[in-house]
Length: 376
Image (tube, rainbow, N blue to C red; front, side):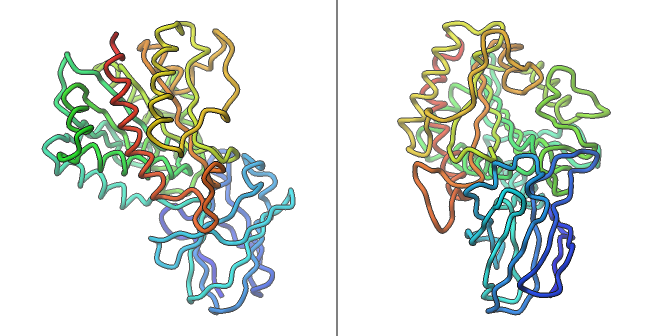
């Protein structure tokens, strides 16, 4: 028996792995940070024998409420990921599984590898409607990629979509993959209509360093990028710095920042009610978008979410509120679950990569509905 995490987005520390019924593990902290919750490891073992894997430090993780009613994911082929029995006692997370094959992967959510990210970018740029820009490089020397979809024009709305500021929220890039597949489909009527009136600026992965390092929430030097939008720096947060500088060049009429929430088992949005410039126009744009997304998919809901900010009390270091205030535009944080959508539960797979992709497709329907109002 052997446990390994020496691969893209791997994260686990082996405390003890002498017997299948008492494997003791710990999740490593993000580099130069106290955040941790993402795990991803491979087990080599005897097939057909139950393995009990205890993550000892789960109770001290960044979001311990995220372990309640949570089930870990497993995969034999790294394509199909399924849920396995998981228990949380308030201190430790216990995963129990009888592997059917000699090696199996386990993860907090379905991983989205850096190689797949590079493939996504190269595939998108094959479309005549897509232009690939290199915004800059990260602190580990990786590319920060921007995909421009549609022909830029002063008469068109400028729509920015960013994903995976928090690298462990891999569902965000799965959503982007689905959104891009539909947006670049020249036989899709909504996609064609959207590109007549809008140009999209899409950053599929805002935090490639943290993604490869197996971080939950931070970049290569322990910076939470979603708290850097008021004063980003090349030393701590070049990813935000480069994106914001490009936004200043293009302007922004709509902004979506895609995330995952550890605790809440729902898809929801967080808006800009607390920014200083919030007014009836902004409120109408938010309500139009939410109503359109509710009509487009039962995966979305508005009953559960974050507590609304009081007027003037928004945190302007957060992406959606910072961009919404700076550009006086519709700006939302979109959150997806790590667990399952409690309104449409799936015992075998929970909230999954295919469901993320389909939500990305459905987002375009909602954007199409609100886009005529964006400059109104």
